[in-house]
Length: 153
Image 1: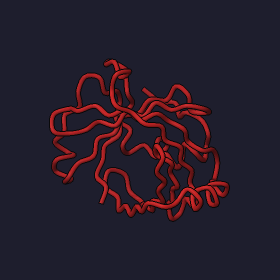
Image 2 (image 1 turned 90 degrees about the vertical axis):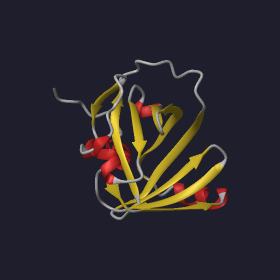
Image 3 (image 1 turned 45 degrees about the horizontal axis):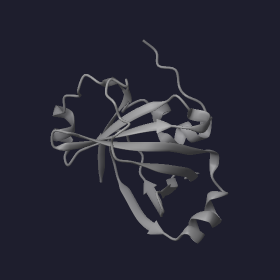
């Protein structure tokens, strides 16, 4: 089970010295959602259910060869990003700085143990607008569209 909230990252903190890693991912199926991801030197296949804040998620590590063989079937663009990790209270905030076609997009996500914990979370000042329930900001849709959605005020 994955329980997370997603926000635009306003950039109000310095991230350059935070731990980070490069991620490249593609979606070989959109319904059901199946993602292949290279994270550092490890490779994963993840299946996710429909949903926004709460979704079923099954992930398994795969070989580089399996990743290389299947990634060419990805729909849309491959998503490239650098993920930074920032401790905030008892949570780890994942700050994704997108590269390539999605250059300029900055998203932060926080995962939770329970729905109650997620609903009671008060985001810090350096979080921007919440996009948890905005399907345009789901990574699979970013890959399919290949462009940054415009936030409406």
